[in-house]
Amino acid sequence: MSDHREFRDLASPADLRETVAALDLGGETERVALRDARGRVLAERIDAALDVPGFDRAAMDGYAVRAEDTVGAGEADPVALAVAGAVHPGEEPDCTVTPGTAVEISTGAVLPPNADAVVMVEDTSETGNGVAVRTAVAPGEHVMTAGADVAAGQRALGPGTRLTPREVGLLSALGVESVPVVAPPVVGIVSTGEELVRPGADLHPEAGQIHDVNSYAIGTAVEAAGGEPSYYPHVGDDEAALESCLVDAAEECDLVLSSGSTSAGAIDVVHRVIERRGDLLLHGVAVKPGKPTLVGRIGGAAYVGLPGYPVSALTIFRRFVAPAVRDAAGLPDARTASVTAEMAVRERFGEGRHRLVPVGLVDDGEGTLLAYSVDKGSGATTTLVDADGVVDVGPDTDYRSPGEDVSVALFSPDVRPPRALVVGEDDPVLSRVLDDIERPRFLARGSRGGARWLRDGIADVAVVAGPGTLEGDTTELGRWHREWGLVVPAGNPDDVRGPLDLVNEDRRFANRDGESGLRASFDALLGTLSEEREEGNESLAASIEGYEVETHASESPARRVAAGAADAGLGLRATATRLDLGFVSLGTETVRVLANPCRTGKPAVSALGQQIEDIEGVTDEVPGYVASPE
Image (cartoon, rainbow, N blue to C red; front, top):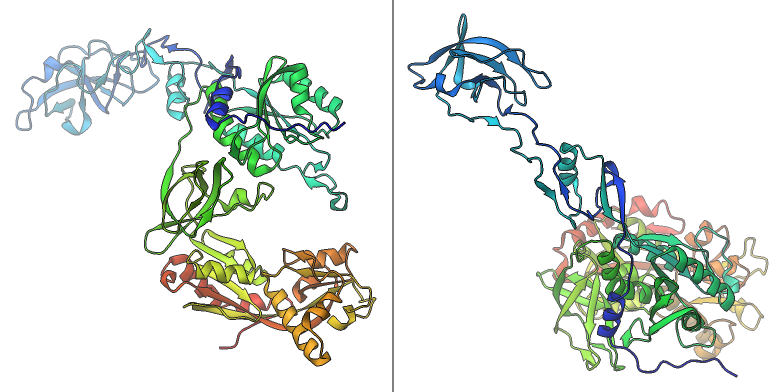
């Protein structure tokens, strides 16, 4: 019998927020040494146990005097006082101010007996047997009396105060060695799924394994929210092992966060464990991403089951769980920032769920921010860094129109749009050029994608390669040429000489996707060969095993060849050289860097053009590349 469990009665985002906020995440008190207290939150009030300063001290360099002895002093008629001694910081005075005398004193030194004021040194002149005072002072002038900073018994800092260097300085002055602070909630991090491997461990992609993104991504997000992450060993989908891990984490932590195994699929078992060993409060939320979120309690700990995909997991954590962690850590609400932007192109949504849409931002060169969707799916980790914030889209909104104003909730107040948005063909020379540009963002969308983004007014710059024309007005910043062809095993054991050697020869081919300039060059060559053979281009392509299977990265076909999964792959000489593979040249293609004419004045776009003017220094270092002649 199937164990498939359907989501029913999905909770609203507001229900999720309230349920998580009601969880008990700790809030205990611990003492830490003052040197370790920066950033922590006081759990109790601290009163001053002594006066600061603990003595009357000089606030200026000068002379300690009795104020009444300076009455009538002026520039034309100074008062002459005998010098009875001197006192410096850290010394106990060994002299007394008597009528008609003064004591030389340094800033911070203890005021000698009978003195009640200090005359600044610049208002005095030395005489043969003393000092001439040229200004009158009042009692207390230039003196910091005992307790003037903080008086004994006075409230110094209250509970809830976050300790910055300023507060640490005050506590140091009070002689405080350790402080009572709110203990951060300990958050257990558990990633589930048979396919996960921690970074650093051996990865076997052929077995469907992927690196565990969530453990460290969520753990660092917990730290940013004021919690203390505790990492638990990765567990698969075995129910008994998962139950044991969750129970152990619940005994040691205030909150247990798992990711994965929360959806309604047959192998998803967390909800059963929580129902059996704790209390299931909520399972399923009408929000995208994040529908399979689960909230409950297990043992004495709170529990939140995050979705398995990294974008979903981090989105739900940031929006709904992080505020509860911050509250338990005694921290105020996180600083937030939002900006108003215009939708760059029409975006469709639908589905009847509240959506949190990740978007990137770009300045159109005239001061208007444009927002564009970068949602490549919850499983695409590049969405985490390609986006600048999130647009909330209600369940009744089907689409957003170009030019429509939207509010973008930035991931942090420090987020700034890229200096230049470059979209298009992935290219090793381009990567080197971008290294010298201030804060660019590159989106690898292929030549056709780059052309569309430039045509639609989103990209500042498009990088296109291979045959084809670009519609609309553009400004070329520069170009170079690259050698392309077939990447084969080292030594070319099958003696592949060109595309025709792949036709009906039982050789496996690794192709690029249709957005790629390399694919356009290859298809153009197939078209020429088809005319020569007087057969249809589609027929020739269909005769190549693997032609229809697309890869979406410039090195992917070559890596398939290196792994033995293909006998030949579409690629560059530069890639073959770097991976120590063989190469069959099929020609050269031009890489063009094209700018939106309205944005050539952006400093980063201008800097990119200047870098390309000296591109020969880069192309000389990359096999198979040459700079375009003047």
